[in-house]
Image (cartoon, rainbow, N blue to C red; front, side, top):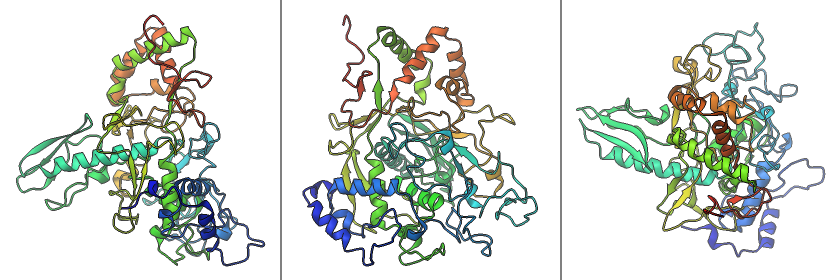
Length: 528
C-alpha cells in the first residue's frame, strides 16, 4: 500500500508537465476554472503539497458551463428530471432552493478569515432535500409531483416546509472526525458480531454509549434499544442482514459517512459537476455535453484537502477578569452536564491519525469509491506539512478536542410548531410518511471552532451562543434549566468559555493562544 508521505520528494515540475499533457486542445478562448484535472493514478505520484493545492483549487473553483457546470437534465439527487421537456437551461440554470445554487464550494464555505473550507453566513444556508425537485417554482397550477411545486404526497409545500434550511458548517479538523467515526463503527460492529441469537450487548465505543443491540431467538435483529445512530445504519432485513451501525459524522442529521460521499453529493447538487465514480466514465447523464467533469483522482484530492484542514483551538485573552471567567465557565459547563453530549475530547487510537482513502464504510448506492477499486492512499494527519495547528499522538493516542459524542439527540420540545424541528427527515425515504413526519434528531454540534463560525444552531437562526444554549430542550432540557438557574455571572462565564473555542488564524502553531496569537499555558499555574 502506497502512502503520500513516501512521494513527497517528487518533482513539482514533473507534476506540472504531466498535467499539461492532459490538455490536448488549444487554450485560446477557453473559459474554465480548472484547466487541468488529475488523471486517475496521478494522486499517488504527485507531492502531497500539490495534491492539497489541487484539492483546494477544486474546492474554490468557480465552475462554468464549458467544463460541465450545471445539470440540464438531472436533479440534485442525480436522478433524471421529472419533466425532461423542461431542461435546467437559461433562465433556469440556477435555483436558490433546488439548485444548482452556487458557483463554488468556497462561495459558501469561507468563514472565518476567508478560508476555503470554512463555515458560512446565513446567506449561505443550504436547503437540504429541495434538490428532489426539478426546479422549485411554488407555481400552484403545476400538478406534476416534484417538478416545481407539488411534492410526492400531492401537496403544494410552502417555503417553510419544502426543505430543511441548514447552516453551512466549517470542515476544520474533518479528517480527525471521519477517523473517529470509522473507529467507532468498527467497535460497534465488533460488538454486534458477538451478539448471539436471544442475547443482547451494550454498544459502547470510546466511552460513548449507543444503547444496546439485541437479537430474537430466530436471530433477527432488534434495534429498538440502539441510541443516537441514524435510521439508515439501523436497517435490517432479517437474521442474515445485520444493521450496519455505521456512524455518519457529516450533515447535521448524521446522513453522510465520509468526506468523499459528501463531495460526490455536493458537487452534483450545488454545481452540476458530476464525478466519474458516481456517474461513470465517458458518460453524460446530465445532458450538458461534457463528460468526465471530475475524475476519481480529483475527488480524492478534494477529500484529502478537507481532511487535512487545520484543527480549531482556543483563544484566551490575557485579561485577568476574562481568564477568571473562563475558568469558572469551564467548570460550570461540566457540572451542568453539558459535557455528557459535548464530550471535551475523544481518543483516536490504533494509528487512527493516518487518514486513508477510500473510507471502508462508503455507501455502495449511490456509488462512492470502495476499498479495492483503487489503491489506498494514506495521509498522516499529525504531520506538520499539513496546515497548522495539528494534533499529535501521545503514547499511541491522539485526543480530539471536538466537544461532541457523534450521536444524534433530540434537543427540541417535540411540540407542534416548534421552529427547531425540521419539516423533513432526510434519513427516511423521500416521500414516505416518516420523511414528512419531520426531524428532531441532530448530531451533537462539534463546538471546537464554533465561537468565530456563527451563526448558531442547525438552522443558523441564532446570532449569539447564548440563544443557542437557551434553545436546548428535549434530551437537553434539564441541562438548559440548570444553566438558567445559574447566577447571571455564572451564565456569562459559561458564554465566555464558549467564546474561547475558535478557528485559529492560518499558520498558528499552538492550539491555545492569547489574543495576539502567542502560545498560552492553560489552565494557568497556581500563583502565576
